[in-house]
Length: 364
Image (cartoon, rainbow, N blue to C red; front, side, top):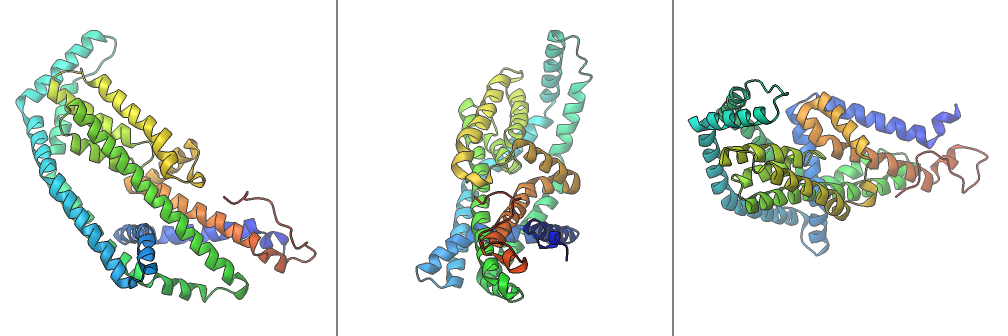
């Protein structure tokens, strides 16, 4: 057999390609794919808490139910606190957009900008903006339908995650039982480290989004911008896609400020606010919540997001970084396992006991 087939790099490459093909096949199932991904992410997120309770003597099933109950209480409290003002702001925003004065405000701003920058042809911005916003405000049926689909995912996902949390060890043992003996110990170790590292990444990912959303709400509220809760929630959710949160938050904030004041007086403060949030996120939040091994070059992030958007739209953009992290951890930990457990030297004659093969870099 050619030596290349015995190299660790080749083995890891084949494993990652196989997993990518499996992921692509599952993605063809549409809604099932979304539910499965959500369930797995939720499992990694909650697993450390369940294990901590189990170590303290709580039955595993009871521990899972306790965690679910705590989450339900937290969600109920948040909904009871945030839902009334959120609904009020949505209704108020729709009323403002549909009012006759809104078109006049847009037309006046357009004329003011045109007079100051005459060499730029804006066209009939007022009509286009008004029509777009009115159409968006009137698409309640589509929004309700999407909310229904999301609600189904939020109901079925935790149900599937419950069994993954409860019987996950059994599933792992069944899988490992199929592994050849010389890979047995390595596989257990690699699976454990994958679970730990992915759990940390997912918790950091959600924490960052929550912080960006909270900073956006607080900043806009202090500035006196209406609908701060809506805009902040949108910015936080959008930040699940790297670099997008502050941008997505700034655009509706500027539109709302125009409706509120009738001019562009708040344009610069809003831009400064979201630029500051972006800087705080990059300088303070990201280093604090992410591990050193989770950092990625910005160009890599942008390329991944563009590719994911082309393949799966907005859903692909949201899932791009978690899935990339999954495969990155699998590749790194599998290579480390092959090297550390000396599996290659069982297959290759004439190699010294401590030798290794260059290629995938050192382990974090």
